Length: 260
Image 1 (tube, helix red, strand yellow):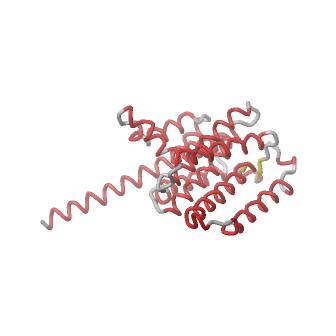
Image 2 (cartoon, one colour):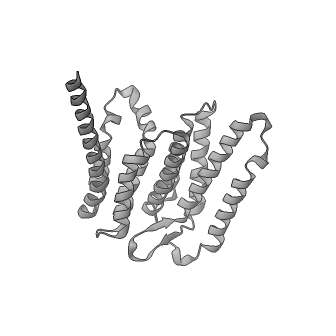
Image 3 (cartoon, rainbow, N blue to C red):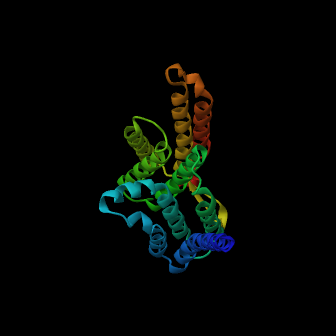
């Protein structure tokens, strides 16, 4: 019996080590292969291959599986695309993205608490919008609108899937539409903040939508908590803070020198 328990513990340790190694390989490999190849194709394929379980199901479960993994896919794709658009030489941003993706895969993604799911959604919004804004610069506005609808839908669904919200589908679609509208408005004056030769580029719309997503979720939770006794004062602080922050960003940090 003791030998059986010892053998089982050894197998568990070995499987955990393999799991950690594969995640590190994905996190670092997706960035390195993108920089060296000068193309995002191999990096995106690597992310998809790592998610093979999502597609290894019967056809009727495929769309449900894809929706359940949208946030993780958005983060993975965004890391590869941001790496690609940073250039074909290794920059500080490449190391930052590789380290972050490893942290995401090993520590952030496995969490399932309410706060963790919110954090995961906000990360997907920020990275996904950053990649979408940079990728679609100079292209037809329809593309950024469609991508932002998908990001808004995925982020909202990721949070709401664990709730008892009766208007689950409607809420996620509305969130997607708001994201699409904001992206369309910002697309006519696309501002990207750059940080020297580090390769770090942060679109203004990514910050705005991340703030909106946080305030939106806070308001939704307050409405559920207070129900019939809900008053605007319950969300006044975050709403005012979010509006002021967005106002400051738009008014004082929209200098054309940052224009994409």
